[in-house]
Length: 202
Image (cartoon, rainbow, N blue to C red; front, side, top):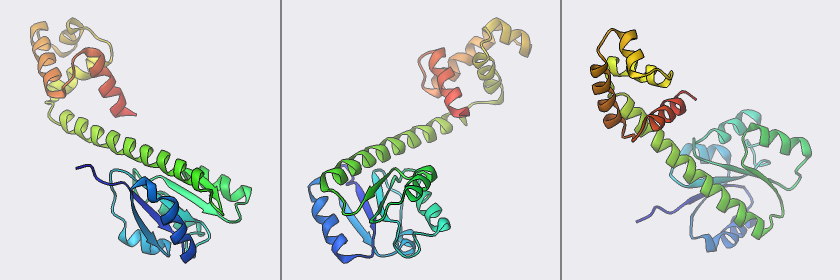
């Protein structure tokens, strides 16, 4: 069964709590509401599809250190900032700091729903990419030191003959190592191998 997406809300206005519940009801998500930034941070647990809606004027949330902690709370947690007084400098600073979007109160229901949908999709994509990266790292860790040397040669554009000359081993041995590398890393071609290694180094 697919895990329900989670929307976290940090807002100390009870009316806004009700409004968020009403505006986001049709998205069929789990809504978790907090009245302070610290309360959210104390209970937050990263998930696979999630986002945070935070009123930047909630006590604590306005401080730069707290904003930094909120924006970095989770590797796959897009943060949607909201404010009844969205000064240009406030919006610019939030976006520069990593906010996914900035909405003005009173929040438009249609705009909120679309922004949340986009944020949840972004979160899910980040989560999938993270899992894929972790799986790739685990496979790369299976390579022997010699196989790593050969991989570096392949990525550098060297042929099997050039690699054999550089490492002082036979071409046949290089080819055997390359076959095992392809099997261990679950790639189907040299191009895929190069992409895998280059993405790891970014």
